[in-house]
Image 1: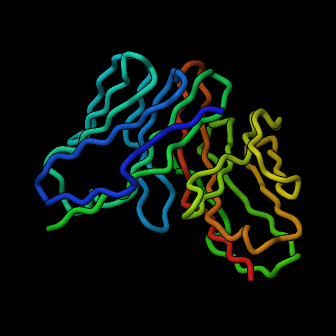
Image 2: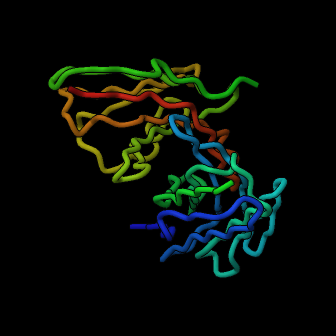
Length: 111
Length: 114
């Protein structure tokens, strides 16, 4: 079955630093989504990508849909303490298929 | 628009009991998906309902079931609860526009089975 790989499981950065996360798949996806989850809450959609090569920004966040359609990247610039949380990638192959989620990366930001 | 709402937010049950969780999607969204989230397994897909029909199903036992009503509200039921069913249950709604899948999550129901 389709699987999404996110690594490492945890990342520790200093406030003000930039951080990059990637998500890879063994199969092709036609939609990539990035979510952030705070403790005790549901995931919140950060960025949605629908086209190979697409680069989309949302404030300090930038995400890219890989050309091969088997990967996606999320960059956070000038990190702040509220960036702490779990970042999930999700992919979908077809219009009626389910979303597949990665296991998430826990980001910690040191003040 | 109001976001996805889930009730109850917290629930404590004992083994062998059954539980029903409720999800109200964003107005106009016809698709509702359910996920189980545990620390070890991450987000595991349970099932998706679209226009009152189950469209996709994950690899969960038959004790997990769901349904969707004509107003798109959805319920999930777990029968004969086991300790391992303790988890955060998340519901997500989507407009399911062709070619553009975007799911919006509710806050979740945290279930503890004793």
